[in-house]
Length: 173
Image (cartoon, rainbow, N blue to C red; front, top):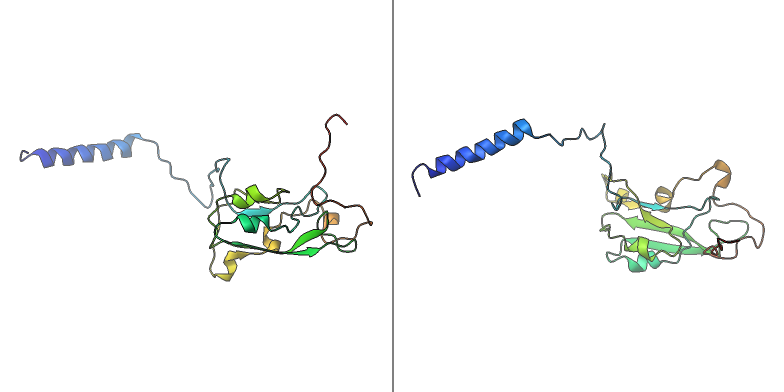
């Protein structure tokens, strides 16, 4: 090892830094004004979805809570009536909470749901100033209703909704 070897290596490092600084395109994004698009498989903030008719897809089966490895989801179900209808079928989730401080964004809840009610969206802007703010309730997770006349709960005719999971339609019909 010669006397000038450390100086040569220092010069190489400085040359590499100058080359990348002067000739390579920057990838800086001005965040609040300009947002990057996320990859299709990105797992962000949870969303409780609705059917096209405005009813909630969640039937309160608690399979998402059972599949969650970090025990971040709490579901309490109640019975639907024809006077107060939240979802098709017999039950709905009267309480649905996700503790976002515990969530590891694994997607197991999404895989376990038989009605595709819970999905992980593309929202990555999650901030909390208090631990209580980190517990997302059903109201904050529900997707907005398509129109104002589709609000839940609502009154429906008796016998209209008899199944929790809609029947599959034959494409030839």
